[in-house]
Image 1 (cartoon, helix red, strand yellow):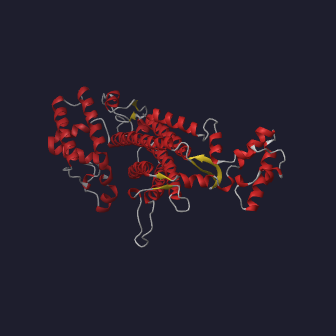
Image 2 (image 1 turned 60 degrees about the vertical axis):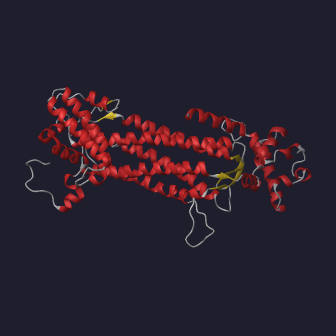
Image 3 (image 1 turned 120 degrees about the vertical axis):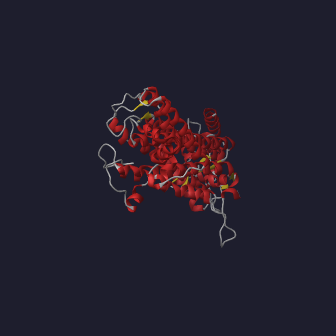
Length: 455
């Protein structure tokens, strides 16, 4: 492909380090789409004669069919997906195939291919994120009044509902969706026509190719067009944050399925056993989602490191941009599918959750709030009074709600029997009616709102 400049071919080692076809063949569909758009423009502009353009178009359709059928032979000697397609095209239509590369370079060609692949993948991920949000919202509506402990520092804090807890992840995923949508909007400019780095002297129509490929507009600077990989970095950044969210949820599933928690059960479909311990039921799907997060984060760090010292415009280092992106976004897709399956599969254990919700003096804040609301006690003083009552209960080894009115009045004489009612878990969660709070009525409204939004 180097024409007359080189007298001999590359060494085996050079071929090994230089070839990218083993992984960039994933761009085949996007590469052919870009070539078809470029060809149509070359024909319209009179840069390639109609007869040659029509022959090339038929050849591209044949190459596409062979790739889709799995009969195409990829050659490492041809380095990459672009030259593999062009090489096969030459076999089909002859020397006219060489006209397809008029007014473009592999630099802008790979840039447009890669953008198209990332855009297609973002579109698929957005659907998967919405599927997971929908599954979580359905379960949240079912479990709107199911009390469970809320934690800070992994210590019992205040009672919440299981539905409320699930909706927290719906909110996180909503932000993930927004980040991917923002990244998609910014990447949706076409670098095709920037050529190697300086543009071209041919009378091309970049608006036409951009429109044909579904881009909003062509990129405005030819140097930036071929040097930019922000679109991949943004997608990886959104993916890394999303993977962290999935990992946090996966960790909670791991905890919840232990005998010590016993909050939910996973069926055999999302569990595995042990080769030596017959009693084991391991939440391996959740553990793998948690573990795969490292690969997604690593891909982001890897691409940032590749790009950090590159002068404009294109450098061969940028061939290292794809493998991490391919792996990370496909890993996130698998993790989203696994998490959606687990959400639909899990069986809550409401009795275990409710019992745990009342442990650890979790309704102490409700008592402090009662003191503020009914006795007009300053909150800091109410906090101290409640703390002394909790200490009394702890010294006796009794739950808070088992203390008598006399016990409490020994700490604060003004406490009345009404205070005892606020110590129940159900009363506690029902009282949290502020916007965004855990009250079952709130949870139902939010779950229904999300389901309506998600369609």
